[in-house]
Every structure is written in C-alpha cells, then in structure tokens.
Amino acid sequence: MNFRLILDISRSMMMARWQQTLVAAIGVTFSITMFISLLGFMNGLNDMLDGLVLNRTPHIRLYNDIKPTEIQPIHKTTNNDRIYAFINSVKASNSRMEIDNSAAIMKVLNRDNRIKGICPRLNAQVLFRSGTIDITGMVNGIEARAESELFSFGDYVNSGKAIDLQFVPNSIILGKGLAEKLLVVPGDMVQLTTAGGERLSLKVVAFFQSGIADYDKVQSFTSIQTVQKLLGKPNNHVSDIQIKLHDMSLAPMMAKEFHTIYGTDAEDIQSANAQFETGSFVRNIISYAVGITLLIVAGFGIYNILNMMIYEKMDSIAILKATGFSGKDVRSIFLSIALSIGLAGGLLGLLFGLIFSRLIDKLPFETQALPTITTYPVNYDLKYYVTGLTFALITTFLAGYFPSRKASSIDPVIIIRGK
Image 1: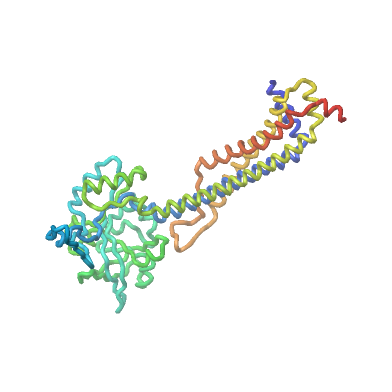
Image 2 (image 1 turned 60 degrees about the vertical axis):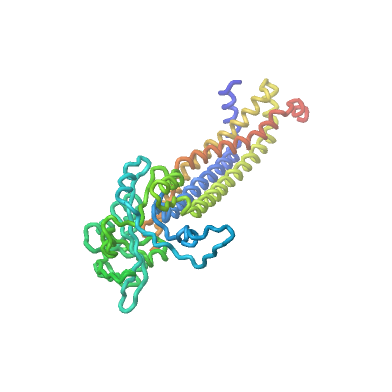
C-alpha cells in the first residue's frame, strides 16, 4: 500500500466536493466548540458552588458533641435479668464542650505529614443588643491568618481586612445580613451578651459575606482570645480543631483514627457534605451527556456526507479497483477522508472552544450574594480538550468506517457494465 498515493487520492476527492467537506468539518468544529465551552463553564460553575461550602469546610473536625450518658444510674443498680428498666426523657450529660488537652493535641497534629494545617475555633451563642431588641447570633473565635490560608476566609471579607482581627483589640467581623439588622458600619461598636450574662463591646472592622443569606444573618467572627475572655475561659479553651489535609480522600479513615486516639468526636468532610458531591457528580454527567450528544450528531452528518460521496464516486471507485487498488486501499482512502475531517474540525473546535471560554470568563457577573465572583467561572482543565479531540476522532472514524467498508466491497465489473 502506497500511503502517499492514498493520501493524494483522498485529498483530490475532498477538494472535488469541497463544499460537502467544509460542511462536515464545520459540523465537527461546532460540536467540539460547544463541548469545550459547555464543559468548561459547567465545571467552572460546579467549582464555584462547591467552593461556597467545601472549600470553607475542614476535611476533619474534632469536637465534643452533646449526647446523653450511655450508662444511666439505674443500669448500675439493676442486675436482675427479670427486671426491665425504662427511662423516659433522658437528658444530656454534663460533659464539657471544650476539647481536653487541646494544646498537646494540636502540637501532635502539626507534626503529622498528612496534615496541611490546623485551625482551632471557639464558638459561643450570644445576643446582639440593637436598641431595646436582642438579636440572636453566633460568634466564632478564630485565628484569622490560619483561617484565610486554609479556608479562604479572607476572600469573603469586604469593607475591611480579615487580618484586622489579630491587630485591632476587641474587634469583630459581622455577617453582612447581621450587620444590616444591627444597622452598623465598620468603625461602629456592638454589644454582645452571653448566655451567662457576660457583656462585651466590640468594634466592627469588616463584614463577612459567604453567599448563603441565612448563614450571614447570624454569624460573626472575632479572635479566639476575645471569645475566651467573653466566656471567662483560659487561653487553652477551644471547642473545635479544624484540620486541612493534603489528600482529602484520607479524611474518613483519619477521622476514625483521631476519634480513637484522642477520644473526641471526629467528622470528615465526605460525611458532612455528601449532598454537594452528589450534586456536582450529577451536573458533570449532564454536561458530558450534552457535549457527547453534539459530537454524535456531527458524526451522523459526516456519515451521510461520506455515503453520498461514495454514490457519487462509484465510477472513480470502479476505476481504482480495475487498475489494481484493493478493497483495503479503497477503505483506507475513505477512512483517511473521515479522519482528516475529524482532525481538522477537532483542532479548530479546540481553538474556538478556548476563545469562547475566554469570552465567557470575561463577562461580568456581579451579585451581592457572591462578593468574590466578578466574572462567570470557567474551568480550563486540559482533560476536557483531550476528551473532545479524542471523541471527535473516534466519532469521525466510525462515521467513515461503515461507508468505506461498503465502498471496498463494490464490484467494478458491475459498475462498468452498468455504464
């Protein structure tokens, strides 16, 4: 088989019907362009939605949950198997909410190579005084620098800086919705009252806007030392240890490990946010399904065009076979035509897909619910481009294979006799 001759004949046949060839290539180009643009935009949107929760959620959270005592007093006094004890309205135990020996635990965790970083946290329910009205809220004692590095806390702070919590004494960052309820601006003072009756006035240095309205209406943030002072607790008092891992997939296994070693409750990110992973998976399936459907439709177009080309080129096929070209040679000619259309259309589709993605990425997208997002999100993952080009070649190969097999089986004697 002379490959150069095969390619020359293929090129001649394509140029003889260049309008049909162009239509087929445009079909592939359009399909790949839409595949890349749609997949990049859909997955960029998935990343943004997941980031609203998953990027701010620790991979493992160590804490002490409120739960009833497993062994009640009556269980200790009743040893008769014939007696059944029924206890109604079991109350929670007097177990402490803080993590025992938290400083030593964090010191050990910081030496673990699997862990990227840790952030202690201390939460407290408070009342915000607004005139004669008390508004229920939650104040989170955090280390602002660590929270920003590990959980992108600073990206959701506006009208100020997150790091001000460390340098401005008695300062607080209010959720945007909570600030609107209190009618305060940065620089104003707010008064907090704990359940124990302790009061403290704090200076507002910034607003926090997560994009989840109900969350922003009750949440506020201050330094962990300020919450310890508000609750009258020592400086080693923390209620949560948030852990960020290098490999998130290790979270379930490590959560069980830490629960056994430290005797605290341990919640992993997969258990806490399973619904978000499910939503992302479904959205990915939808976007891939739409893109692949476009490529299949383009493949049918190429199949029809090659079928018509075979019928129109019956004389040429007969002459080729009569002059010594085998059925395999004829099949190679039409397969090379199909793959040429797929390759040219696919490469142009990748280029236009990248251009369209860039245009989408530049479109302004501003909403008060998402202060950190200024343009539409787009994902430029290389695997989308590789998948698009690979599927384009596979689709066009299959579209050309069946017509080429039909052409290779044509008997030149019957065609010539018919003429």
